[in-house]
Length: 316
Image (cartoon, rainbow, N blue to C red; front, side, top):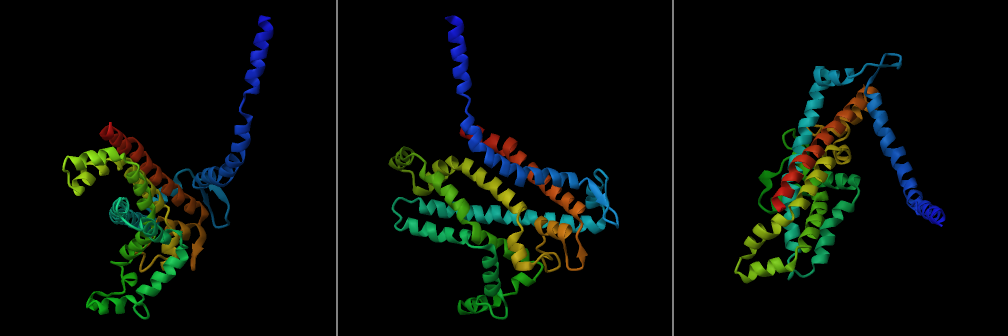
């Protein structure tokens, strides 16, 4: 009887194998492997090869990376794009996160009427096509037929108008602020969701004790959304260092004027595919893409092992 019972238990154990989970996960795993993991591995592999005049590829190890970082013809545009990417990210972190936090705080006020309408209107630019956004803002800011010059003149600020998209000192800032305007709805929604999940007991207790609204927000509500702010930061970092479409839509692959709006995404595009008189170089393009992956991984690891641990320690 004992052996029969053990055999029955083993049979039940075999029948309990969650094959349905494998069936459900298999399509997603195959698609993810085919379109994400395999291209990533193949890009890293391609970055270790070089091509001669005939297009014949040969293994050269880290030669492409040495060229990218030391050859003036490659290192100058690479570091220019990297510096612009840092500025692009910094503007998003400071401006977009601050505005998103302020809007989320206002929308979470219990007495605010029409909060749902405001959320929808503020989030709508996020759902629009980047090509449409770039075209519209080019029309708005155009010094020839744009409405911004007349709008500022009507406010008595006509002297402040300038061709911001055409000047090297202001082009990147202008494009960055347009990107902030489009995507500010994402941190706003994430922070708003965190704010409305704060227990009302904490807010009520502070209010009963006589704490003013600003003190309640700064001392009680804000620390409780630090983890969400951390998530917003890492999403902004990854998104900004993968950015390409808005700058391409507004300034083209050359990212003018004179490379002032060039970031790693547009630099990779020109390197890999070529542009106008510049021939494409797939192996160097793969090296640029691998460097972008390395930069993003360093930022993510810094967040996971640095910022996140401090946040957990702060909230503990």
